[in-house]
Length: 463
Image 1 (spheres, rainbow, N blue to C red):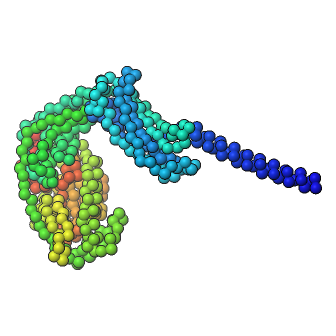
Image 2 (cartoon, rainbow, N blue to C red):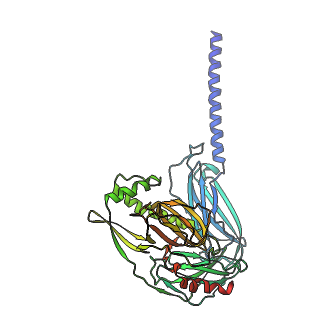
């Protein structure tokens, strides 16, 4: 009996020791969580070079274990806090139980820290503290925290800007070019027309402060909208300058397209088959409308992205060449689509449809570098050529392509053959001229007199 009692007591003792150890582990784990100071990871998008009049911070915080609870910014000068800002995020279920990584909680905040919102900010230097908090039990239930500290110069003097060209005549939907000078330290300059910003480029490498900017009045911008030359420095200070110009309004053509099942059955399935981001809506008409609307928008955004990789100098010297053919549709034609007698869609045709012989040779409008060659959404088989300083040309609906991305092409070089790929009702070439990804009227670029007056004559003194 004594031995049985000893074994029983030993078993009880082992169980007690086990529970004590478990409790100890739990208390240690909880203690570590409560004492932890680990906060969200902090990233600054477009880290500022300093503080100016309109400087903004773009702060991004992420936490794999806990929710991002708040972000705060503090600006200090001469030992005094001159500005404080904080944003608290919507409370979500507390993830105290998470001991392992999972879907991160993320938060982004754009916060102004320039003199516009901090009247007491003075030129010199300032300390900017950026703080992120999570909802963990860390720091004894106050939440884990992370901090980034920036020591930055403070400058308020905006860039200097002087317009060099005197007269500018712009057709609605068309382009012109302005020349201007900026002061050293200017990091971005160009022309703002409504929501569109057209960046500038150096007139020549040896004259970085003398800038050229080809700009447009896009077809969808009211001609009465004011255009201005803009210059910004690395801390967000901005200078605006007026310049002399005149815009000639234009009434664009309207057209009605009657959709048929035969047409949609021919064009829609091949596009969906090569566009994985588009899903089958279960209806031929719905699929067409998604392609004609959503995919058209996707293509437009991709063209803007392509424009950001333009060469910083003109790659051409002669006027652009027009393919000898019949014009079937013009720039900015406003199209109404009907199906079974009902209006189902409206879109704007932003190029020229040029038709001739079936599978006619398609030739490059001018010298440049191929930046896209392949299937491209509503344009089917397409080529995009960069001509420098934001100017690009797009050739769509081709049956075959004879160039590849990165190729240097010459004016009138054959780049493929016309066809009816994409949203094409028959064999033809769709040509779009682009400025910074925005479609513009190609007629001007085909005109030697326009090229001379708007581009070459203005640049001649700097050759």
